[in-house]
Length: 513
Image (cartoon, rainbow, N blue to C red; front, side):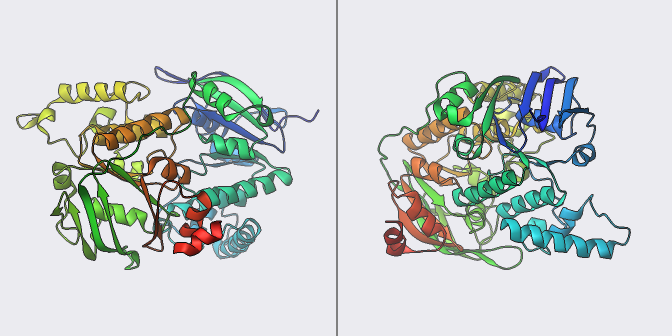
């Protein structure tokens, strides 16, 4: 029998009182796609960070191709043929695509020669795997979907034989995810080994050969994918039966609470990203915005939330204009009953070096319950944070822990708890379950439905079509900055997908049928 591509034996890792990995054993066969799943905070990313050299295990052995190895840094991992695509991109935002791909792997004393060879190799990889991206583009100007492509190209450029992907489809549409799966199958056919960390059981069932399940820092099961089911994996992940579908009654729409009229928004380059968009959201309904990332959804909700200035148009909150072309102020909008869960929790939702309790009041820190005269009411803030931690099952349950030390899904819960607990009139939610595990998705969806049923107007933006279809009472589809169609929740994935690709109106419906 050929040696395993990767063996992890007795891996143990603690961060102070947090025991992230407990005596983990994992064997990954060569030339296979091996899934690793588990709840947020289960220890998946920590385990892979040990394999990639970001962390060193407190105990245990790593074997590559059957031989014990020492991996102290990512360079050690790369030298052993291990590449990693991270959940949160490891890119220099003011560098070009080419510079990011080359960074740390320049490979020539004369940089000009190195640049020429890198550009040629990058072009080959783009063509071979249909991962086209402008190599001269600045990273911060690219939508997140294209930034993801750059991360994958970086790993392929370094010639990885073992490729770790940590939540690689968190920013991709279903069609883009399917394309990624085809790339992974091609890599597998070429003899490469893929380790796929994901919360999405659909992905596990679609693309993996084997799957391992982690729970609370331990490896609790390994299954052949063909011999298991979504239901069994969900139960293994959470330790209980999980509701895998959204249960909600009929919406009872009331008065219009959010009205958008002829909104036009440009980006920093002067490119029109939102083009004359109009719609409304009523109390007691969820309006979902579907679309491929980069088609104006992000700029639209930023303008509505007062973060980005609009060129033209009006937005009315509970019948009163909010001044989106000039004087809109996120602080005043919160006072008027608008809550906003941003799409990117790291750049817009949290200050990662702040403690959890500090992030739990950001934007609301002037409210009476959080102040004591001219000073912050520290004990009141921490007590409030502990209540939110318990209510939203945030792990670990430590309000003094720096937010950077929580998993991505638990960071998302911190933002959701902060915004939802303010009892807003209008709730704007961008990508509510990005990077969130199946148990937490169930919880978040229930909370959003509860907000709707309590008479709140909810504007939901998500690239997950299943999420849009199951959560929304009405669905608007955006393409190239415009709303190209409105559908009910019974619209098929095929019809919505065609609208997302720019096939408008009845043409999309006829083509889907």
